[in-house]
Length: 147
Image (cartoon, rainbow, N blue to C red; front, side, top):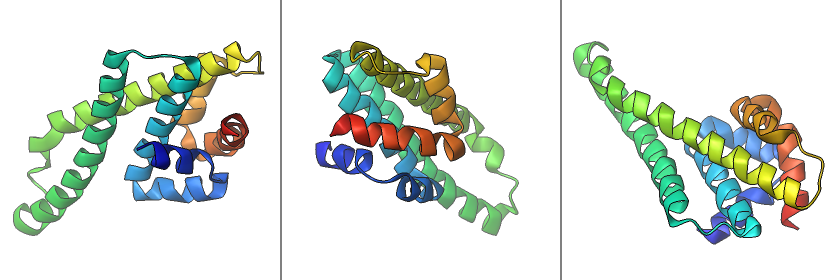
């Protein structure tokens, strides 16, 4: 996983922006931010690592299951069975929010430890959440921090 994290954090913003439309790479990008900056911050909390891994891989797994289920449901039930997966969808949203919070917290902590200019936890959270704009601001900073 470390190679994947390094790869994501060394790419230019354009490549990361277009990977977002595939779905799963966005969660891997968030995972990369959290794990790499937790290492740089000296955070070695096993509960946080477990939460990060679970949230990431549940979201990716759910993304693919949702696509398969939607294709099946539309072809068999004319789209009437999507309510069955609604609780799983809400849980996937919660996992995504957890990743956003952990990512913004890790990045902000690193910036404050290095006395770098920071947007704060809330600013980084919104840049990660509104990914379409935030990637152009965050990815160049991430590339610089990883070098």
